[in-house]
Length: 184
Image (cartoon, rainbow, N blue to C red; front, side, top):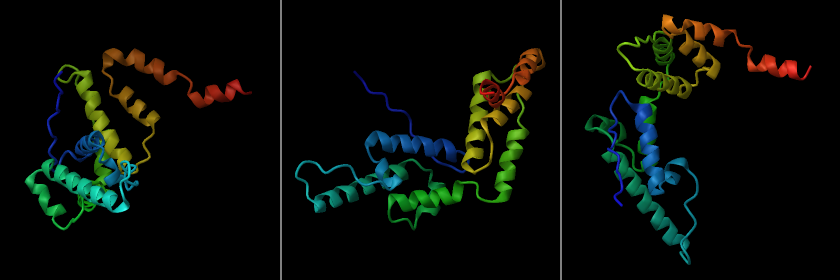
């Protein structure tokens, strides 16, 4: 049986949220996510001493750092050049790429509310994937975007041919209203 290896997603200025998810998955598959999450190292193997555990943790950190270096473009090296550990390098990348300022958050909201869908040019799965990326960025930037707001926005973007479905869904009572009526 052959094992499938997915291609490495290289980090550039545009794909932070996709890269972050891919990198986390790679580390989890290698058993190295504990380095980034700050959790204690896995249990020692057999009669392994604490010095051996520390040595193994240091080797895992070096492997994690190597995986990080292999999964970023050369333009990103400038952000991690002072990082001596994998966690420090990842934090430096996060500090650079995460939307931090009010302007960044406004740009994300502009992307979300300025989104449009032409169903003749873009299939629904591609549109939903594009929406998912924007929603993930909004949630990561601590915007108060609820699932209801996301659904409302998706329904607003439905083409005219599907408006009858949109109005039916929008007219449904909310879960909170149904819950209140059940307990009255």
